[in-house]
Image (tube, rainbow over the protein chains, first blue to last red):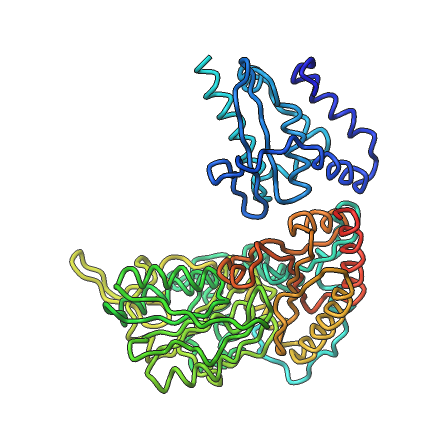
Length: 143
Length: 414
């Protein structure tokens, strides 16, 4: 994991990584690969409470607080969604609630995958991002 | 603006001649030529329709049925010409049996609310089928809830057809509401047979023609239905337009749905009386530009032999079915004998969201998900499908492009 980096640095790392790809196929193949390395949510955590419902694909998200940092695990039933979930987890994982809440997320735009965060995709990602921030907000009020 | 009805001599069917009339087909998506296979959601529009809508705003924009001034007269004439065009197209007996709405959803909500009030009592039953679009389920659920009635459902067979041996008619059935063509499976349903059966038992019948209108010659008198709903935008017309056809005698008895301007005869502060048909059901200023565009869309379709269009779409369907089935692990949902150009499929180990995304990257627009038919998805035990739906402007080469793009996507995802 890249906990030594700041959130902003982690975003930049993703942007640099995706800059290597010139065509859609390479970009999506990389995204699908990233999904396979996602810190998988424990099967017993795939509960109805942890489901972030999209119309098309589903996302499971669990958060725990460890030593003042927010630790996320997640999964999705669609590979491309899973790849994007993996990117969000990689950038936001094991950070303080303040850092999660205060750093604007720009990398999704920068790597040309913004369309997946548009509300009409109904893949659960927008709701997932909101949920990650809500966890951070909840943990920020109980040190 | 032409107001002519169906010409005697039809234009020969030439897909390239037709394509040239759809400006959007020249668009690129992700740098690739657009292949548009989402016609069951909304069809693309020929130039004539786009122009007719624009011409209304540019030359005769005025409110209908009110003004004594020239523009208002012209706007009214153009709108009413559209109504007459639609009457001839669906073979309704009277022009005032054609009610303009904002789409199939509004038409069915009108039908369910008004018929519910007229017919439904505690313990009565409404029959729908298991392949209905949510917009032909939910309005009836609401009506049933309001009047203490129960919704009964015709089961669906493995091939995606009504199980006619299990139609749940009883002596309490008051309304039958069924789709003519399934939006998800493409099945052409034997509506005529079921409507005849319902009529024998005094059941009022409502047809959802949203998916039938763009593909079939719909004749409401031959079908024998009491009400028939469809959208303009799935039949080459503008969005925000739709029709509810109703048999005169029934419409006269049905109470109004929405109140407002246009639909009244006299208003006092204690009681109002209703305008004549069709205006009783058309409260407020209608979508005049859209209605004029819809009239033009129907005239455009009437220039061609609809049977030739249907035959072309059937060729696309047969080719797509054969080519897609060659993909390992692919299963087609909906294998009825009688289908329009709609093909829904699932592929083992491939999520429809992923497939839809990777097809889009290759310029191909398909629909993925449950297609607003969640009960049907449950019937087939799938969370969603990928659906390609064809129109008269699609080609065999486009089907081949989709099949090739699907194979590429499957390779990436497995």
